[in-house]
Image 1 (cartoon, one colour):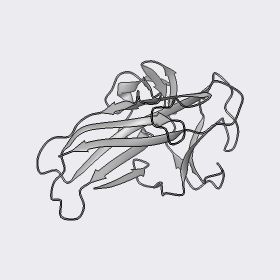
Image 2 (spheres, rainbow, N blue to C red):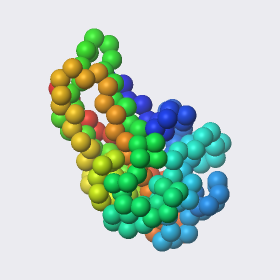
Image 3 (tube, helix red, strand yellow):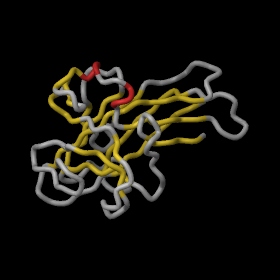
Length: 180
């Protein structure tokens, strides 16, 4: 099984040495406590070396966002405006792939149940009507794809974050899949 994290149009593809950076209104600018990101970009491990931008989707309230066109219902976000496309693809001798469960977690460090420190990360899958606070083991549950004969499954996800304290922080994202 192969997993690819990219922008919906594949203009930005995350590699093992890259990360997603959330910034204020310009690259490198901090986000004010209680505010949400204005830019979402691919960065190096130190949070610099920008190498492409992801579509930015900003949390407004539990059922609304701003993806650059003003406040909209979450259900109005088009595929190409989602922050990430997670592509799950059968590989090797697999001819089809059935996903019985999928969850995207935001956590602190290598402890998957640990809540992100000094920040709140929100997410929703394309088609959902409410944001999920992705806090440790309480991740974003993604739609199962159980139809037979499928070789590729795409999940379109929007992410937004807000700091809860004026300190530099980082968060890890992990994708859990159950397949058969």
